[in-house]
Length: 547
Image 1: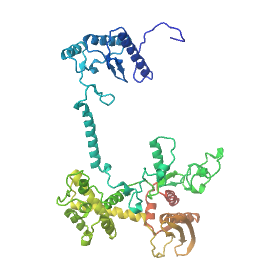
Image 2 (image 1 turned 180 degrees about the horizontal axis):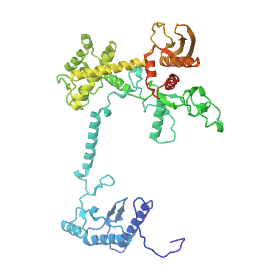
Image 3 (image 1 turned 60 degrees about the horizontal axis):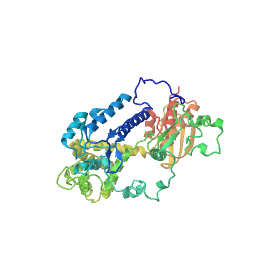
Image 4 (image 1 turned 90 degrees about the vertical axis):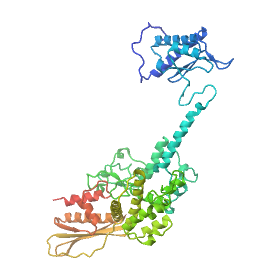
C-alpha cells in the first residue's frame, strides 16, 4: 500500500537481520500472523485447544519474547495439525522452527503408547518439565519435592558466598558499627550513620542525576579538601578555578563581562607565574611530593583493629562460628587471642627478645590498648611498630600460604620497616636545627647564609639571609615573611630570594649555606612536578643554571 493505493506485489530479496532496528517490530508482525493461522484453524474446527476448566476460556498459544507455547489435545491428529500449521507459517515467511530445541510436554493422564506415537510423528523430543521462564520454574500439576529443588540450590549458593565473605578479610566485619561511627579522638573512624535523622546525610538536597553519580560527587567534594592548587604557568581560568585557595572569583563578583570570560591567571597575576614550564595542577596536601596516597593508613587501621581486639585471630573466628577451634596455629597449645598472637606465643617471644625487647614488664600488660600505648612510649617505638606489623604478616603467611619466614629474615624485614617509619616521621616533622656558624676565612668567593624561623610548625614564618665577602664583611641582606606555612617553605624561599639578590648584584661565584639537610636534598635531586614547592625548586635550579 502506498498513499492508500495498492501497488503491484513483489518478493523481498533479503530476510531479517539481527541488529536491524525494524527487526523487533517485524518479528511481532510475524508472530501475529502465526496467531491468525491458529485462530483460523480453531474456527474451522481443526485445532482442539485446551480448556483451563469445564466452562473456562480456551488456551491455544502463549507468545513470549523468544519462546512459543502451543496447546492442543494429546492426539496424533492434533500433532499433525500443529505440524502443518508451522509448515504453512514457514512457507509464507521463511522462518523455520528449530526441531532440536523444541520440546513436547504431556499431562500425567496420557498413556505411554499414545505418547510414543505422537513423539514419533513430530520428531520432537519429550520433556518431563516445563523448566524455567524467565528464571523461575513453571509449575504444573501437584507440587512435588523436585519442584522446590531450585530453592535448595539457590540457598546453597548464598550460603557458600556468605562463607566466602566471612573468611575473606574484605568481607568480614571486624569492628562494630557503633565503634567506627565515633570520632577519631574517641577511637572511631568518623563513618556517617546513614539511617539516623540527626545526621547531615539524610538532610542533604538531592540533585538531578543517578544515585551512582551523586555518590561520586559527594566523595569528590570531600576529596577536594585534601588537595592544594599549585599555580605554575598560570593557564587556569581566572574566574572559574580556585587558584587562590579562597574560592572561585566568579562567586565573589556580581557578574563577569563576556569579553573577560576567557581570561587566564597569567593575564593579571604575572608574579605567580615565574616558571612557564610548570603546569597548573592539584597536589595532595598529605605528602610534600604532592602525590595522593593512602598507604600510611594501612598501619593505622591495623593498630586500630588491634586495640579493639578485632583482628581475625583463631579466637575471634571461632567466637563467630567460622572456625571450629581457637588454638594458635604456631604453638597449638593456647587460644590465639590478640595478645597471644602478637606477644605471648613462645615463638613470638623469641622474635621480641631477638630485637631487644627482653624486659619482663613488656609482657605484663593484659589489655591490647595499654600494651600498645606502653610500646609507643619506648625510645625504640619504630622497631616496636614494625615488629607488631611483621609478626602479624608472618602469622598470615603461615596460615594462608603455609610459608614459614625464618627468624633472621623476619628480623631484617622488621629493621627495614622500622627505618622506613623513622624516615617518614623525620621528613614530616623536620625543623631548622640551630648550628654555630664558623667563618672560613681565606677564600675568594662570596658567601650566602640563609635561615628560616617560625612560631610553631606550621606557624607564622619568616626568612632572611646575608651575603658576605671572603673577609666576612656584610655586602647585602634581605628578609621577608610568608604568613602561616611550614619550615620547609621558609628555608626554600630564603635560598631563592638570596640567589635572586646575588644575581641582581652580578655575583656569579657564590657559596650558599643552609642548615636544612632536606632542602639541600630537594635542590640537588630532580624536581617532581607534583611537589608542593615545585615552582620554587625549579626557579632555584634555573638561577643556578644561568651563566
